[in-house]
Every structure is written in C-alpha cells, then in structure tokens.
Amino acid sequence: MFQSHPVLMQPNSVAKSAGVNSLSKLLPQRGVLVALLVIGVWAVSLTVLLSIDIDSLPLWGRITATIWQTFLYTGLFITAHDAMHGAVAPHHPKVNNFLGSIALICYALFSYKKMIKTHWLHHQSPASDTDPDFHNGKQKNFFAWYLYFMFRYWSWTRLLGLMLLYNAMSLLLHVPEVNLNWFWVAPAIASSLQLFFFGTYLPHREPEGGYQTEARAQSTNWPSLISFITCYHFGYHEEHHENPNVPWWRLPELHRDRQAQVSESF
Image (cartoon, rainbow, N blue to C red; front, side, top):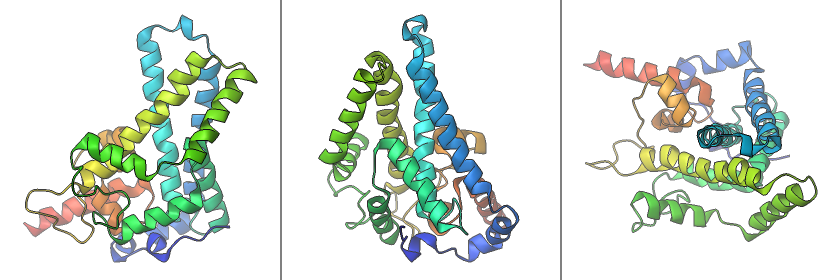
C-alpha cells in the first residue's frame, strides 16, 4: 500500500543493544494494541464530548476536557509518526501503514503517503535548509517558526475537507457548533502547538556552542511521567533520531540507558 524510505525503518546498533528486536518478537502485537488504544480512546472521548450538553459544564470543566482532548489528538499524530518508522506493526507493513493512515486522517485529514516523504527529508537532513520542519534562518523565535512550519504543511484541499466535515457534523448530525469549537477545533490547533514546541522547537533549535551530534537534536531530561504528559516522550528526541524504529513507549528505556552510559563515562 505504502512504502517507507529505508532511513525511516532502519534500526541501529544502539536499538539492538537495548533489545528492541527481541522485544518485538516477544510482543509482536503490542504496538498495534497501543495504536488501537490511542485511536479508540480519542474516538470515544470525542463522541462523548460532542454529544454532551456543554451548558451543563462549568468553564473549568470545558477547559479540562479540551486539554484532555488535545492530549489525545497529540497521541494520534505520535501514533502516525511511529507508523512512518514501521514501529506500530514491524512485521506487518500493511497493518502498520493502515493504522498510520487512519491516525493521520482522524488527526486532520493528512495524507500518510505525503507525510512519509516530508518526514524522510527531516530525518535525512535534520535542522538544515532541506529539512521541511526547520526554520528558514530568519524566523527563529517560537511563534515565527511555528507559523513558517504550519505554512509548509498548509493545504487548501485539506482545509476545504475539514470545513465540509465541520458543516456535515453540524447540519447533518446536529452536533452543536459550540461543542465542535471546544472539543474538535480547539484541541486540533492546540495539539499542533504542543507537537511543534516539544517535537521540533525544543529538540532542534540550535544550542549555545552549536549542534553536537549528527542528529542535530537534543533531548529533555525530564522524568518519564512528565515526558509522557508533555508529548508522549517526544522530548527524548536525540534517542529517537538515533533509533527511529523504536516506538514512543520505549524511548524512556533508551533515555535511561543513555543517561547511565554518560554517568559511567565520568
């Protein structure tokens, strides 16, 4: 159905030393189950939130529900991202790509095939002129870089599709527009900010003294729980670039291994 570039699929010696391949053989369906859980919880949560009487929710309840749904939207994209690296179902490419496609469609009608191409460019030359996720050398601050980043992924066709979907849910399914705005539109936009901040801006902005590794990325050193809440461990970004086929839920293990190696070197 789809073909990923070898760079996105290829493990390296660090991943092998961490036992990634052996774990995949022992738990071949875990990635699929995690992906289905993320997609399923997002779908159930959205269905419930779109059908509730929003007037019965206090403001703090609406905000809490929106934050929760934002977190689930971020999970959709992270799931699709793992699929681009063959990490959802390593031994079943068709299943892997199908789940990745579903996650991206649910997220914002993105084309999985096109996203693989742009993501390959990112991994091939991170933080460079040919990296579609990087700034243009001028818009380096957060908001300018974010707008430049979003413009690179802009699509009038996809925007039209989202508008049609919005109106179909409102006019045909009688979903109140206030529910759609709070729990469908706002979380999708907020998750793009979350993904950009934790997955692009923090990891790939140039540190003082310049980039130190070939991946041109840096990792946060936050505890696993904080790392999960902020962006599904996407902050462990150097580990991801070195081991692109490792799923998000295994990145904390690689981060701990890296920290242990650093401690031993001293």
